[in-house]
Image 1 (cartoon, rainbow, N blue to C red):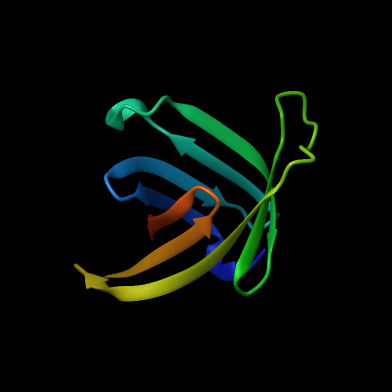
Image 2: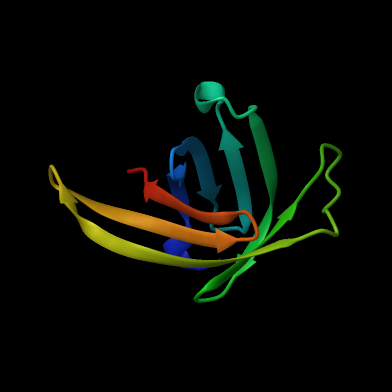
Length: 106
């Protein structure tokens, strides 16, 4: 798992916010969304692996079976400045569903 991806990120696509994406150093991920914006709530958990610019997400079902369906996304982390003494990092993921931007939660 690329070190730059590890952590908790919050954001979404355009006005579709309320997403949280968490990458663990051991290759697990969790993608969730709250109901605040009218999109149904969901949580997707799975295994992730990646390179310097690509990450592969493989969901795991409720009984622990890894899906044969995987999703590949291009990614980049951009340092966008500093707010109140905290560095602001932005994760941009582009996959079949569009381009999503997430700010790193400190």
